[in-house]
Amino acid sequence: LARYIMARTGDSELTILLTALALACKATSRACNKAGIACLFGLAGDVNSTGDDQKKLDVLSNDIFIDALTNCGACAVLVSEENEDPIFVPESKAGRFVVAFDPLDGSSNIDCNVSTGTIFAVYEKVSTGPATVGDILRTGNDIVVAGYCMYGAATELVITFKGHGVHRFTLDPSLGEFVHTQAHVKLPEGGGKKIYS
Image (tube, rainbow, N blue to C red; front, top):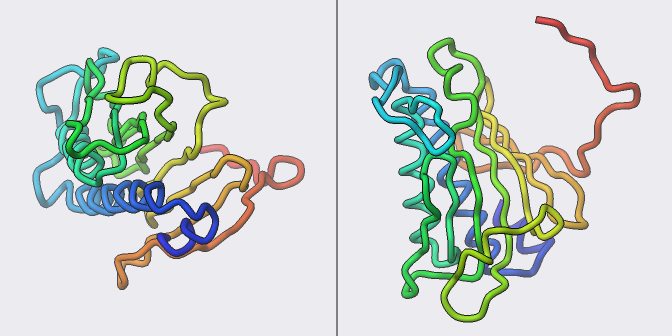
């Protein structure tokens, strides 16, 4: 994954950021896979910023993402669905990117062994000096990288780089690495399979 990102963008700080995101995705995937054994099913007892009941895995995955992104040295601000307020990274660790994310979308499905995922968008900071709220309140046109990671039978990381198409990576559990499995992903002609379940 890191080699692929560097080859496409030539941006070492963006590569570090996406490597930290991938690490958080791997840790969250493992937590989802072990949820039953580790007693991670059920409610945590709190409510998130959108009024949803937080699940134990919501809290754990949020902590994983915040830790990975805060300490990678590439992020200035983090915006999580699980937090009421943005997280401004201390200046000593701050980089030039803003990341908005939902660490575990669909977490209400986890008790039923149905796929869940992480969604994210990366912006480049526009202010000079310490990050401000203006770095957060932006349109989708300003997104540099966006994607999702799906946790299910396989762990899939799908990323779109502005102007470089959509790319799919699959976690190889024997290597612990995301392997590039499909370039320039597109919806099939006619919409593809019709599945009703």
